[in-house]
Length: 220
Image 1 (cartoon, helix red, strand yellow):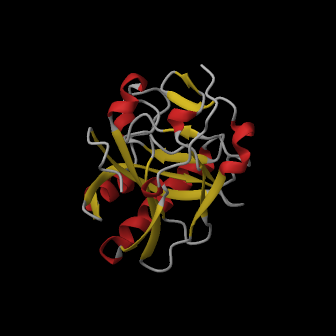
Image 2 (cartoon, one colour; image 1 turned 90 degrees about the vertical axis):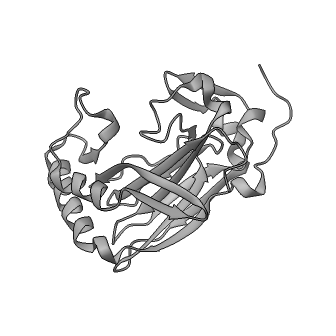
């Protein structure tokens, strides 16, 4: 159904910056990065990730010991009254995409394996950390309430049907590179903000944490 009026995001839904000191896991981060880098070198797309929620699925690597140590060493992060649990790590040696593909996450664990039918009944809260010491991570998002524009679901992937029409609503939030043990990130409700992460020239190294709640007032 076509909607005439496209509303802006509520102010509280715009991505908010996070700064953390991860000194206790400095060596764990380095080991996970080295492990993923080796995996990416061997990968056709020069990308490697650790997704515990996808264990057992075809093409998913599970023998990533250093990454599992990372997940055990930093299983959850508390910020602004919310507790975000570890979801995945991913590293790419090359830029994976040059153009944003605005979408909504259907779950916290992988972003793409949740129930689309209950998307409006849940709050998927994401904490995205940039672990790279070289590259910025840029989150492109639309200042648009998804319920007031046309969306299309492809499996568990929900995207904007006509992003070109919304180009004037595009916004950017930049996550600086890690400096020593200081790590920067963003928090946002990833099933209520149409978003797309884009790489720097030399790819990315990110950690994703998240939580889900039925309380739609929880995103803050």
